[in-house]
Amino acid sequence: MTEKLLIKNARLVNEGQITAADVLIHKGRIAKIDGSISAGNGVFVLDANGAHLFPGMIDDQVHFREPGLTHKAGIWSESRAAVAGGITSFMEMPNTLPPTLTLQTLEDKYTIAASKSLANYAFYLGASNDNLDVIRSLPPGAACGIKVFMGASTGNMLVDDDKTLAGIFRDAPILIATHCESTPLINKNLEVALERYGREIPVTEHPRIRDAEACYQSSRKATELAKEHDAQLHILHLSTAREMELFAAGPIEGKNITAEVCIHFLHFNSNDYARLGNRIKCNPAIKSPGDQQALLKALKDDRLDIIATDHAPHTIEEKADSDYLVAPAGLPLVQDALLATLELCHDGILDMTEIVRKTAHNVATRFGVVDRGFIREGYWADLVLLDMQHETPVTQERVLSKCGWSPFEGRTFRSRIVSTLVNGRLAWHENRIVEHNSAARLNFTHRY
Image (cartoon, rainbow, N blue to C red):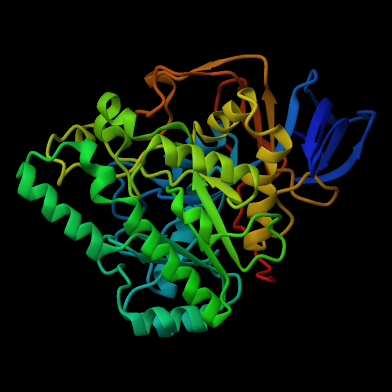
């Protein structure tokens, strides 16, 4: 492909407006946006034929499992699934093997991604009870955020020491992102389930074991710490109606405390456990229909600022384990997330400009992502061309994630991803991956 690419006859969905325009891309960046642009010599033309052009989704929460857990996923396989799903940038979580608790393990991940990723990438530094000095020493731009597990996690990543938590909220040089569940409450609920069922706990008990109170108590504690220390806090994968009272409605600009919901909490509820079982077991748990409706309402009034995936693949064999205590929590979602979000548009819940705001604009704004998340002249051309008139059946054969399955199998999305561009180059086009080396490390301003 030439250094110049011209997207003709697109309908740009950007910054609250939908406008007919052409977009000229030069050396990976958007060079010009206009109602009509002539191609000129040496320009590759992509005719959008009236399809909608979105800024690429920036997924601020994925688990790509590398290093250490590559039997179920890896940066190459999951980034392929991501670009097929319209995700042009991702931020990856620290609970790998080894966990990302040092500056060296953080940089090791960047080295892996530089050679393998098809999407732009960044990584969180994890917090533990004993790496506060590492957090304090984090250089500017080295990570997208500090991930704090204020609930059960793997290895040495549960931060349950109050003094350490206070130190993190006081001293973290960048945004703090939290997983909020109360481990003592979860353990208490689990004891009740064990007394009733023994080892035969049904997965339908999952939202009772990891219940709304466990989420609320931990989220409330996080918001109180953020207010006490004037910290920048982003609470991940919120799942309950009650937690919504902790957040302010309105635009993301100027908020010190922001909130995220993941796509599975918007499409599934506790009634779906009977049909899907462990396939929708995740932490926090998918909860009641009432919680689901409250989350959808909070998206509309901007208490929930960002939509993400928490993409967390496990093999189908692992998911099929009948022992509730053994079957792992997490869903593969990056290939389906944007199309699943567009279902909210088809259903009249969100319009397209709101979806772009929640999946791209707000993520770039909250994390200080440099020159991405908007369709603007001078910005990197991370773009997704969407056909809102053609369907996408979700079949197992379509799945690009290494785990090989999707919780949406059997569904038909009412939109289709035509093309995904990463830094001005096609990464997905007409139902096929285009391998290239245009993905880049995300840069951050971290100016709040």
